[in-house]
Image 1: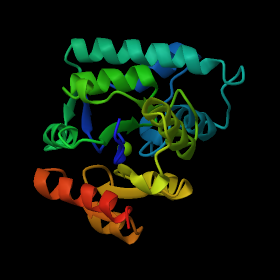
Image 2 (image 1 turned 45 degrees about the vertical axis):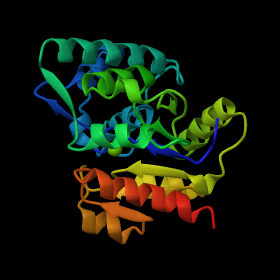
Image 3 (image 1 turned 180 degrees about the vertical axis):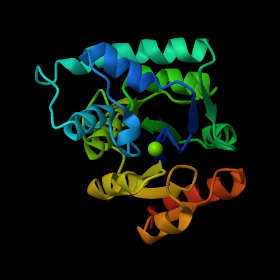
Length: 238
Ligand SMILES: [Mg+2]
């Protein structure tokens, strides 16, 4: 396959928004650990699910028992809780404005591959993408179930795409698209490019001050967003 570049999208706040009258994360926490934990006591944005659980425990002055063995149980409980909540209409996951048009548009450029890098466990990531109508557009990615640190997820996603392509993508031909300074830090840790979008917790001026390669208010202008992304890939060629 002809290589041009990878565009590695974060999910929450970047591609989708989740509206919770009910919080699947907290239900899964209670089911897994037997006591209540509240994701609203921490700032989860940009973090991986395993580290979010650690942080909730740390707030209570505790650590999850049993090493990292709980991760699999928690991932299953979270998957089931999300699936139930979405089915029952208690939780809705929607594509952010322009996200669907953007991934469809990127798919029309030969050699440009949209992938996923998210702190969500893979099962939850897939449920969210499906619920938002984006599931069909992402073939490979890396998830919170693959590693705890976001920067490691970028390496894992790239390796999967490298294997699929049969040759490695140069890091400067990989663009991380996210909504938090953590997405940028992870990208810089792997010498990848980064575009931040102001549809999550952080306002555009805050994101801009972190120094990404580009910053967008949202994805509403598909042509401008595609031009920004392709422009960054193009600049990597020189
Ligand atoms: Mg995010």
